[in-house]
Image (cartoon, rainbow over all chains, first blue to last red; front, top):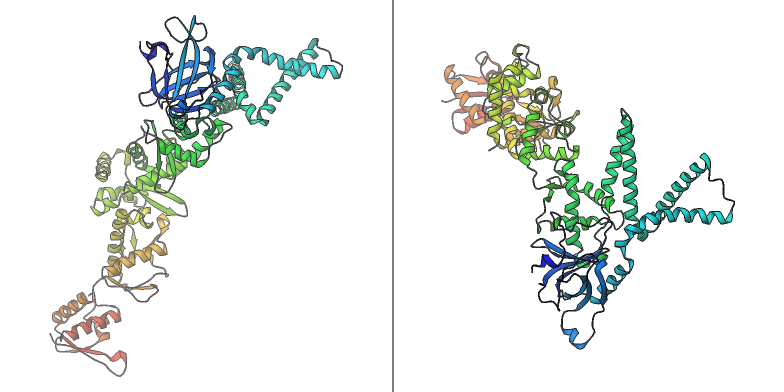
Length: 459
Length: 179
């Protein structure tokens, strides 16, 4: 039987990170772990993978070959404490767990007929089996995977709680009629408000409330969506707030941040992968390139708590070279650092810049970083980097004046060649030689010469 | 065609980036070359020998496109001429530059030719005669900078082709040619 047959598989992202269940939070990472069913030799062992303890599951990931499996914590009947003996001091620590399975030894979620004992062997050398065992018990006790069903009752319970506590100390006001309905709404808002306050006061509580917050955000989004759909013509303000809401939702995307506590020595590795996943969507939105400083803000905002430092971010990006991720860190000559999707091509941007710089207005007045930003659809700071880059390749040259900083198509080479057509055209466009005025757009000869000259620059 | 006086300006004079010192090496080299040629041509046609860096020099700005060369750029272009031997700084602070659109040796040759063509081998001329005499009209020698002329004459003297003798004051300096 293949490993995939007795343990359910885990979906992985492009960067090798596990796709988590809603509300699932990672708690601990340990590398170099073997999983084996010692008493059932027919179930093949899993060797040397990354073990991740989450609030819902035990994940085992083979990062190089990109496959992974899990044991649902709901199926764990018992966890045996690590044995302490003279023998155990010289061998790799082991922790045994008893897991429900069906008669073939296949692990499923919950309803099994028999059980299997799985041994977790820590070959990592520095692994602390006591700490892992302790964490495992904590997670098993909190039974987060069951919270889903209880949630519905919890919400109602909270409302009732706030109402009844107040009720004992003062006379209950009317609950019937319009006043009653308004009162009920008020109470609901107050409880939501209290929930929000509690969440933000206690950072630990926020972690558990994170799931609630995301649900709340989803509710609000639905409301906005249905609101604007109902109106025949949504006015600009509504659309603006809808966009804001969507952006905010994007930023609240990360429910299970990788932390030093959960990942220890593997912190930077896992962080690096999580960052690669996160950065994908913003990269698409910004045309393949974002300033590093922007990523720092976006990423930390999405994490909410457990913020990362700039050094962590830099290290995480530096690690990308080791893994197959679709993003890379790039430093421009000016020192500006950006994250760029690997699909991004400089040459393509240059082609667009040059075609912009050859338009009649641009030949006369040049282009500014904001002009380029508008045409390319990227931030002005990044547009300036692209223009400077094109300049260093000899495609553009600069014009510094009281009017500002502008770029022109580089024609210095042309003057040297005594290209009279080109020179004549500049003069005509500059509008200084009245005699030379002609219909510029109709002059295909000059266009062709211009094109040929530009192509010569691109050696 | 734009003009400065009776001098026809080249087309690229209207290209705004021409007036901004280019940071990229290759582009800058081309820019420097163009400016060097332009400065020499202009000075030759207008008989300008001395350019003051802080003074107004009409070649260094183009009113129609509202651009002019910064102090730094002017120094860069003039220094390039100096390196090539086509100009000399007249002071350590680089405030004034002597433009040798003909090198001193070239001037010396030109004078020899001039003397031959006008049959002046045996006559004695004053320095001022050479600069502003009737024979000089229409030649490059007309209005030549006095300092440059004397250097050229001294060069000829070293080669034994001329003899300079001083009068009681500088105005009286005379030259006899032995060609």
